[in-house]
Length: 298
Image (tube, rainbow, N blue to C red):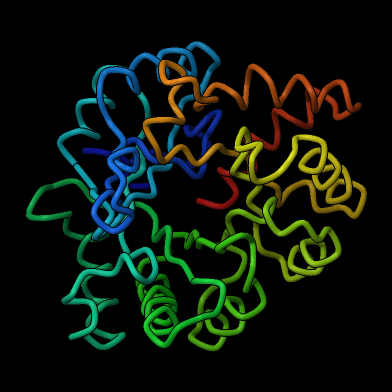
């Protein structure tokens, strides 16, 4: 069973899923930029569009220190009848809260386990995923401890781990740390691999059995749709179609459509039609956005 807000569902009930999203996030202090504080009515308007596109489940990866707001998530879940999967864990440096450095990996794992088994911040809302836990372009000691703690929490709870790879890098470093700490790699998703710009590297990671996140879709300043489609087709050609995950990773006010951004709906209105034009079948696309997230959470 999967923890969503106030109840549990089965993987089969997830339906079309955006596996790496933020519905509330606040990194504005660290970034010194109010654009990095996501929220407001404008976000609600964009969610109406993806609801019409058939999205049923959103994996919300805003965790401790990132501006996680359980009340806001409950509001959005009630408005749209989304399955929202809340997360536990910590992001990466320099976004780790001060108390992170005072705890060892076992203590950090216990906090994550408590949020999964008992509830977040004294509520009855239980996390259903560990993520997004991340690394910088070079893995720091604190980030290594974070990944080790995430692995320990997964061993105890069985929930998936979703990581953040800065610009797609350090995939093998993450896998080594997580594997040595006992993580189950078949329940691991590596995010932002569309930013790696190296298809052979991504194929080598897929060979390890992990899920491959192509999840900054619409952020054309980082990567073109053409490259993302080529990457997807190469993964399919190599037999890894059941490991592909798609999402948009909306994190800023400027990403919302009212502010001229591409927003969540870009995946359905722009990218998926391009995939179909590139001869990826509608049936396979449906399996990627419906069955693959369910497999990750099964």
